[in-house]
Image (cartoon, rainbow, N blue to C red; front, top):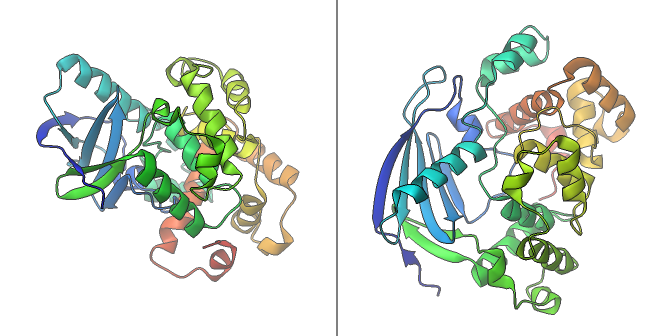
Length: 327
């Protein structure tokens, strides 16, 4: 059995997100598949993070309200952390969680929309969120391709067990992602033996792109949407659907909505046209509707409708949705 790396050093810091900020709806997305690098309960998220090569355990805890948000952040590490390290780490956490982002224009513009208005009232302060680095997000995207949730969970667990680091902190044992260079000696055949199938080639190619500095997440943050899109599409095995998610979740491009997968097409058809998902509305018609109603915030608006659906699913049975979810 893998012996965990015990993190004994703890440091506590207060973070003040831009108001409004809805903690649980931002730090937990019920539509995401479960992964061994995090755990959530109402009001608290535990998350591992590798920053500048150092494995960390984080506890992100709600200590405020939607209109007066405050977060208590506890950081566990193997040894003491220098202030310059902490300053960079906190900037990264703020960026990944969108703590600095201003939702006021979105809220004002759509508060009277017949469909979106009630959702803004219910989820005011929710924002898309990415808890991982771009490299880590891409690994998740690759293992999610063309399979059922259970298979994705299994593949991710095998990868964590082979390349990740099991951390022990705050009474939890969670895996921390590996750095790309950790896999330098790994071949496609090595990965295929881990039962990831054709994804082995994509994982290896993405690894090479980061190790060879063909893509730089921090640099891309300052670029425009189309430049970000081109850089992402150059990555082997990363298609328009994954790029759309990355632009919204990782780079905060809240108007990104240029591609709809067949699965999303069925769900959007029910949510926005109330038709049988199996008689789905054409993608062009869906994209036209989003442009007409939500231009400037297409991705964010759809995110509210989508997340509301999956939060409802945690409390009630939605037969038409269950038929579409591949377990």
